Length: 556
Image (cartoon, rainbow, N blue to C red; front, side, top):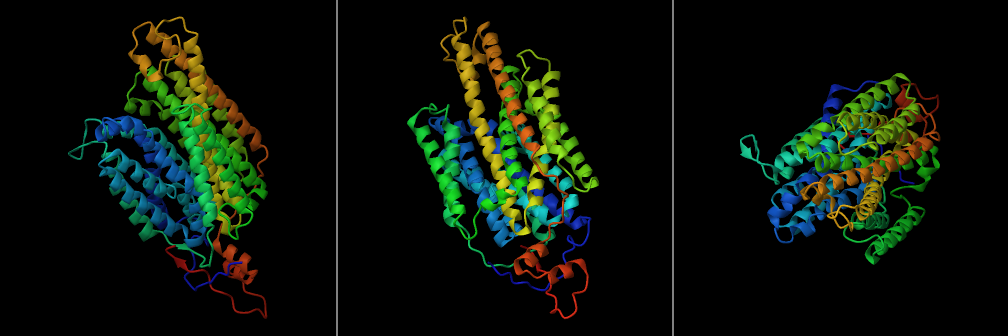
């Protein structure tokens, strides 16, 4: 067992009060600024990928274009479990600052890239930095904010991620268009350069304002486990990205990637039972809240990815709206998330931290929103998708951060970082898996409907969706109608998947949110309850040895 060295230091102001100081609030504003950039870069390039590819490599750029998104996803997803462990080892603040520095340096390199190959490589490095931004930001909030106040802050964090998801295409479309920003003509390179001033401001706020107590302990990091989870996750993401697109699902390449992913992830699970300090300790899943909340997050991520992508596609392809107009028309979802993410945080605090009802209600609202979206037709009035998006937003606001907080609340303080990144890792994997499954469902349904079509230009099933808009009438209207009918199947399948999360929510254990304080971890490790006497302010029992001082409040 690792032995902590406890250094004398001033008391931690966050542990002794139920309120969060203005200094900490401003520090967390800096945290959220940088986390927003990491989430934004996952979506902002999707709209800009074509002009980027055309600008850097007109001949071969289109072939390499999917890697602009895939490389980023590989870097960010595969590193999430490792970030959780090193945040527990080296301190969440130190790890967050390092991840931000990597992200910003890679952003500068992306903006200066001279070829598609360079840009893809820099995007992978950027993803590695981004992997620590959001997940470690949740750890920082858990360390810096009292548990009863944490729901409010994490509700805002969930809103930030939702804003990045919805406004990413809007911002990407604006920056790659013919516009002027601060007197300078924009181009696709601004997608990356804009990260620098915002990220540096956020980084300065975190460095100067945020102080956290840390445990100075000797640790061993499970590097073989990190290699296995990174390789297994990469194989899984490549399978879900290429399957049904570049290769058929039955292609040997996809089958090999699927087999390699299964073997590597199984070896990772086996390794976690042998490592002295595992990246993702399997004992975490013995706690019922973790065992239920993590698959719920996977399912929620699965369903979510099948929605935002295809609603945006509906607005752009079927209704002919620009990326900017599409982002504005998805505002009802943001409104729903704002209402319930912040509102649920306030109510949870007022109800002494009891939270089980919120994931239950959230899954039902989200399923209802998806069902409404399943009624979409090519000529549906805007009120129909707006209603579905609003209900979905209400549900998501009650789900995402509450489930992460439930996981954080159910584990010992030494496992806080690992548990947080485990939760976000499952959600990210669900999103990747959802994109693959729903993409296959949509492609299969659309191909079948095209093959059965009596319109000459559509029969045979060889028309790509993006080419439908260029067909003459009546083939264009018929083809778009068939595409929307196929898209409806995606929304209804996502609603059924969300009902699985609703069924899982009954198994969540109701718990009151407790204060998460590093002093508990030290007392537990040493078996010395006198440290808790120092925390509560009571005197030690007669005859006891002098009390140890509180852990050093350093910038870790």
